[in-house]
Length: 232
Image (cartoon, rainbow, N blue to C red; front, top):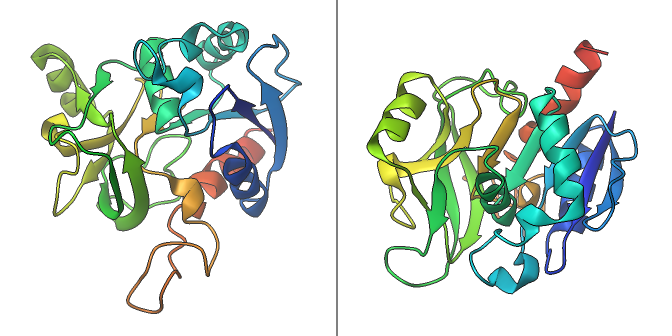
């Protein structure tokens, strides 16, 4: 299965995401923000970073990149799309996901290994987890506070579109401790933590077993690859 990873000006984690796709059993395909060609990929990852320097608002300019018209059409057609950190910001700015991301409530950039609870295992990117499973995923952001009006929050909660929730500490002031959400169909998922940084022993978060041994992020990518193969 071919998984496209889009590089925008200011993307930092595109190569990490490509490696995560490969470790998850897929074929990573590099995509460029200025193109209209998705190169016949089966899924798409919008990686983390600081697209266009976060000018105007984080993700706001990237949401109008040429390739995003193709991404929006593909997502609306059911293609799995994952937005990580800045990618999440791009997804909400593109209106593929509701709400918005604002400056962390404490005003500081945060970088930590973050515990999450898996709330929804019916999405293209979370089906390999167990419901209520607790995982540890690295987090690094300055504008990661998720916001939405109350009717939107009620809908997300009531319809099971909260996919991941912060545990033990809310690192950025996100409403309802929300770390990641999906669209109603479940093919588009966005989250602030970085699963691509927890895919390989020796490079992930610390666990009780050993330092840097955490690989909980790999399940995001194996979930999508397995779903694509099952539906091929």
